[in-house]
Image (cartoon, rainbow, N blue to C red; front, side):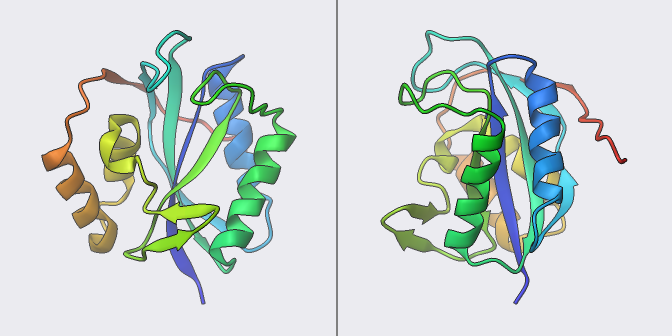
Length: 167
């Protein structure tokens, strides 16, 4: 069965835009994953640990035939390929790929919670997902409800479009 999934992707180490582009390119190369939309790039202030560089963030819509845990393992492999190191919780990173929404499914497993447990609190997740979920009422309803309740006062600025290398 093919499922519609929304990812939140961000990073603040190195060439942030190149890292986002590489993450999407790596996702497109994965079996069972079909990237269907990519949001604009948003520059955001750090969330949680604010003593670090600003982030660039995007949302990616994809369809997949993978199970949630298979997709999570794929995302971790992409992070590893792009030199992600988990040194400090909410700390600097080259890239971070999170499953934000899986349609209207609720997943509660020891290693995976969907919707992402902090998605509703983070402008850098909600606004990019809202941008690309306009034709997906199951997710758009969740995002709009979260935005209506959201108390995130951190700034977020659209800074451009992600241009992918289509070799």
